Length: 116
Figure 1 (cartoon, rainbow, N blue to C red):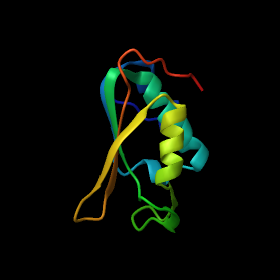
Figure 2 (cartoon, rainbow, N blue to C red):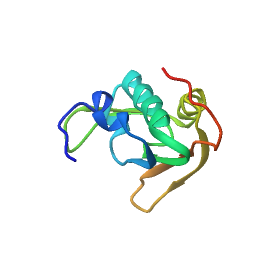
Figure 3 (cartoon, rainbow, N blue to C red):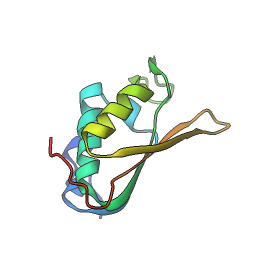
Figure 4 (tube, rainbow, N blue to C red):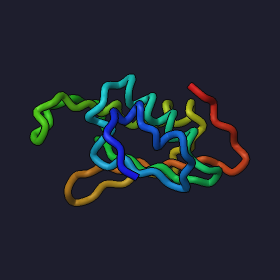
């Protein structure tokens, strides 16, 4: 299935998944849209499902070298709060030699997700 739509309006969120990956995406979105996408991902995850996304660890903004658009990381504490409010648990973080920072989250079995 292919789709051309803004991520926050994607029909993919009408389905359910065991895992969702948002690589190099979140920080290209506004703070409000990042929160919406995290909430929608939480709703679309099956119990026990996992969510991986990349964004810098620090709260920071910069101009993306590829798109020329403003990029925005909300930072570790704000992402932790948004994930928690969406019913997800931040299980861990990691970084690689390319300076990509990863957030690993999951939806507990038997946990309900608050619809936003």
